[in-house]
Image (tube, rainbow, N blue to C red; front, side):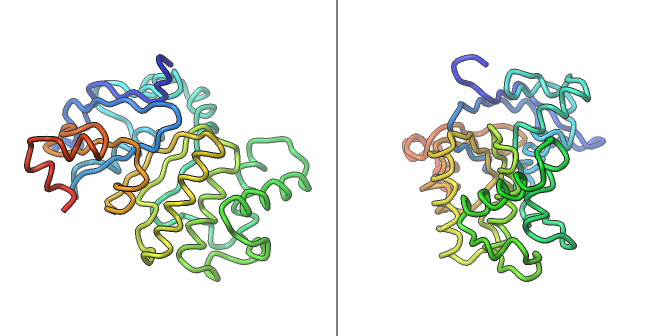
Length: 244
């Protein structure tokens, strides 16, 4: 990992049959950043996220995460890598038949040798970390509001103390107040835990107030990489108008 770069995509090409989604996508993400994947509908931002978390393969190019080329890595190394990141899917993807405590504990039971009492204590700590009261632990996903479900899913993503956190549209479906509270939570977690966050979002408030840097995808390529300040200074009117 050179110069604190945790993720590097080089000339990524993604094809589905004859349909090309990405054609030479490259970018870098540094340690401790909150980095955004932006773009219009169909630009391939969620596909790119899925490729980074090894749910989908790229056609050509490379993606290096935590010093490992994930496009050529072995199954065993891929499994080891997955334990170093947490993922929050767009709709939470909580197991509906399990309590919130069981949802948060599942990765610890699968990948550690910790005793049950310590797993439970750790899971409760993660729930507290994301701003949920301990009484939520015995509830089921169907008993929670949208914002609480997102927080519970975030607690599960943090279960193994990851170095990286991947978020897919974390504020979608939330009312404005809950969305801004979730934004604040992400920034607080980054600052206190020192994790690196990669998120797909189209939320203008999140883009303006949470992201350190971002890329804008379009025409199968990276149209822009940088900060909000540098985007405002660009002479490309199409990019300037992207957020409005």
